[in-house]
Length: 86
Image (cartoon, rainbow, N blue to C red; front, side, top):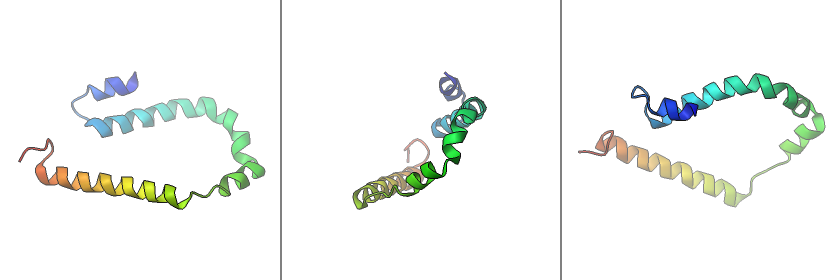
């Protein structure tokens, strides 16, 4: 609901509005759920299990290709103008 209202504001572009809505939502929800998650976040066994998770090469290659694709499209859009017009 918050993201929809922020998206309707002309002052913020699409991704900036989404980022603002997520930041506000995180600020509101963290104090509520943070206390319940704290024991799990401070448990040494859980922390060691999290450190042991290593991505496979295929996953790294997939993330890298997505980042490269976004960068290429962003550069092309910037060269054309904000709406793709020349």
